[in-house]
Length: 374
Image (cartoon, rainbow, N blue to C red; front, top):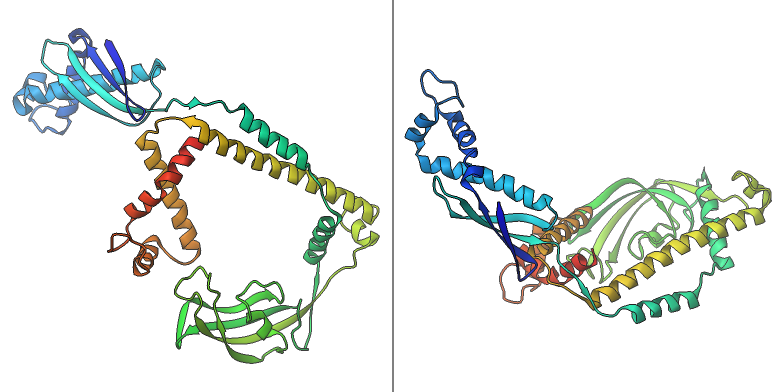
């Protein structure tokens, strides 16, 4: 087997291969047997029809073609195994010469892992290192207190009360949300758990529950925030019907030495604070490391010169679309519905309906950046 490898633009290579007749003729019998598997000829089992009868039935040219394809698969795999070509994606093969008794000639065009040429990067990386060294890692006392308060809140005791609901209480509420008298999608829930004052719902919802008692019902109107993710509701008024089913007071443990002892190995509150400080310090170290790594990559991408294979960019775009569809599903929407809404809002420069192709064109620069980063 002789081969010639030539570099092409956009990180592709062309491989021209010549396989001698003595080498590839051995695939003829295998090709004949494979092609005869679906033949029904009296007196012969499938796959056992004599070669001359197969030739009469389907023609010598088809057998040669099948044998050539088998030879190409084998020899191309050998070329890749040599490690001189870092091929990616599906190769495009073309037979250049195919005749009985002659050498087989073919060429393959395939994308390869791109070469990256780096401009001088030392100065930029040193700047980032210097910046983070100057900043250092500091854990403030307020951060430790906030973390310990979270631990205390997770150990709150819930006590059912018959009084009106107050800020900080845990409640169970039924609610239905309507717009112009029509219930909105995913706008109904039964016995929904909620801690008043956490600001989980849109502004005004939790405030309307304060002062209500168990079993009480109420109707009120609120306006959705202008930046609300569901564009059909953003900045629009909606009617709320709620029923308060349960009010529970959240009794938090007092944060002292006994509280610390109840968490395990600590003798006093200061031991707990020390442990929390150490844990938060390690966590910040990891965060800083990841942030530095991200900034390193940003700079290196700017300094990298490379020709990206289209196959890698398309793969990344496909991955980005998949990630986006998961995000949409978590909001109760699908991609087609999103595209329709974008079209209705004039999201297509050329007019008409926004398509997946439009999204891919918009996201292509980001996909190329992600491929470079990888």
